[in-house]
Structure formats: C-alpha cells, structure tokens
Length: 477
Image 1: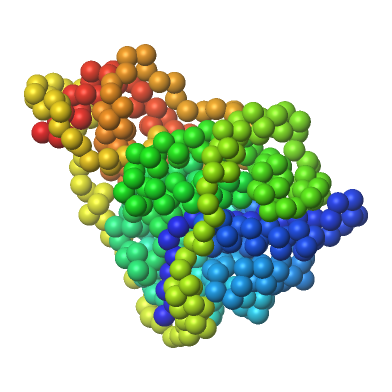
Image 2: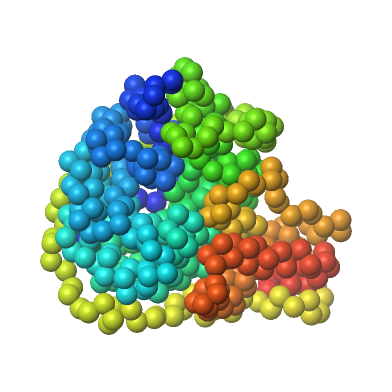
C-alpha cells in the first residue's frame, strides 16, 4: 500500500515556451531552471501537468517531456504529483503509463465530466474505482467544478472512494473553496492513509485549522518561500504569526484570481527572475488560443505584490520533505498491490457523519455573557482566517483587494482573532449539511457555492465590538 502525499505546500508549476515560435514550443531549458528553483524553496513537492501547466493544451509527447524534465531537475527523491486526467478509463491508463515511465510518484485525477448533467455520483464512483483498481500509481482525486462542467464531488463520495481503495486513492485536492469538506474528510479519514489539501493558498490556514495536510497552490508559483513559511509557522504553533503572513499573502494573491495569464505574468516578475530565467515574460505567455495578460492586470500585479516580494526575498529556501521520507515514497510507489476490496459501489457510499461536525461551537448570538470572564484570561492562539472562497472556479476578473472593511469600533486583536475562530467553526458546523442539500437542488449552479459561502462569512461583520467580546467571554467561561 502506498503512503499518502506528504503534508505541506505543493506547487502546480506553470509551463514555459520558446518566444515567437509558431507552435509555442516547450522551453525545457528555462523549465528545468524553474523546477530546480522551486524544489529548493521550501515546497513539499511539485505538481506537473496540472491546470496551471496548461496540460489540456499539450501533446502527449510534450507532457512526457515536461515530467521527465521535472524529474531530472529535482532528482530521484523529490515528490512529484502528475496530472493524469482524461475522459475515459483507457485515456487515463495511457496517461498513467506515461507518468510512471517519466518519474511520477502520484497521479492527480479529475472526474470524467465532459457531459456534466450525465456525470452522476454512480458515474463518478465507477470511473475512480476502475482507475484505482487498474493503476499501479497512487491516485489523488482532483475536485475542480470550474473546469469540470460544474461537477462538484461531495465529501461522502470522496470518503467512500478512499475507503474502497485503500493505498490506491490516497488524497484529494479541493479547488472548491469548501472548508466544511476538509473538516468532514479529516474527521473520517486518517491522515496516515489520506491527505486532504486546500486548492488555493488564500484559505490554507482555514484548512489547517480543521486538519488539512496543507495546500496545492497556484500562488506558490509566484512566492514559494512565503507560502511555505505560512505553513511552517502555523503548524509549528506560531499561529498568530502564520495568520498575519497568510493575510498579507491573500491580499497579494488577488490579481491572479483572474486566471492563468496573470498567474504566469506574476511568475515572470518574481520567481522566474529569482530562478535566473531571462526574458521570462515572453516565455510565460499562455499558449494560443489564450491571450497574454491585460495591461491593467500587469499594473495590479505590480502594485499589489510589492510588499510580499520584499518578504519573499528575506526567506531562506529549504527542502520541503526530508530525504528519508522521500526515498520511502519512491520505493513503495511500485509496490502497490493490484488487489483490493471488491465490494459494490453502493455499499461504499454509506454516509458517515463525522463527529467533528456534530460538535456545536459556542453560541454566536449576541446574548449577555458572564461579566468578569473577559478580564486578563489568556486564550490559546487558535485562529482561523477570514479567507475567501475559491474565486478561481469562475475565472472572472477579481478586484485587487477583497478583504472585508474593518469595523470602526474594534475589539482587541486577541478578541477579534478568537471571535473569527469561533465564527468559522460555527459556520462550518451549522451550514455544512445545508450546503450539501443546496448543491443537490435541480436548479443549482456550481458557481453559486463560493458566493453562498462568502455571504455566510460576511455575517461575521454584523457583530459589534461589544458583542464579539461577549461571544469570546462566553466561549472561555
């Protein structure tokens, strides 16, 4: 049985092309420099042929060349997760064969959802179960409704697939903005057999607060050291320091929410230069038919990311995973047994309600609380971010700054942080099941989920400073 991918920050690396070539030929020289740089910047691993790599625009030979280039650049032990998605099992098996040959440790697999309305839960279960049984490469499920005809995998389906295929389906990347899914999956699936990752950096701390293994983040292309530092600080107990850096990173990330072009442009201005790649801006123009980044977004990248760039330059690069763990992963990848449980799909889909979701947090209603408890009581630095839902799902232009405006009457910083943590737990616990019911409605649109989560989160701003103090006081009583 294969172990799950290591916890930490994984970077879905972007793709470089030779400038002015008619077919946008891969620039493997620049690519190798970039892979090498990322692998020494504190990241746990790299994702090759993900959505940020424009994998859907590459030929089969180009995909193989890119993975081989990555393996040569990072060495035999550094973890590589490789995109293997296709619309049928034969396509996926071909991609898996190429990935193994080229040096992959894990395969990242989207649901086969070309025909969105026809992609039922039964279709999803049958697809992943068949791939898992036939594959000798451990599979990480990739949930990204924005590029899968709106198909959004719920936590019950993901957990059922993991339980039916132990050691074969070993993780999930959630590019759906759902902290509630992370909560339920971490409550139901042990971290030593299954890794649950947030799909963007701007809600990494929210995921870590409920048990995630980290994140797979496009923004780590731009500032890999900062993203790794947020993870390191939060998981080492320096939660407040980690949250403060996380908030700065979330603001800086906002311009790249508009899609792949601004992401690649930001890479050209920061990490590609740090990697010693000349002429990076031209080498990082997306492959046609997609267009270069607009001038307005270039300006936004420059104006918004300056502070974080300065912080990035002060960070030391390190290896993300120790050598022993990496070597163990590489040895066990090919030892995955082709035999596993053969129960019917129906029996695997039993919904187990995680105990973590049943835990009701302290009441958030602004009722009076005991008067003397708020005095100098020290509280644990359990903090959860006010990060936004997944803006990448709709791939629309995003404003340069989207954090809520702070209240004029402010409680103390510690009270505010404690209140945010309580409120986030309350939202996750009370609304998780309701969100799943909304998703199953016949007129539901996948793009509605981020808006709904965002609206729920905005409720936090309705509480006055005094009401926040009362809530925290009641929780600490």
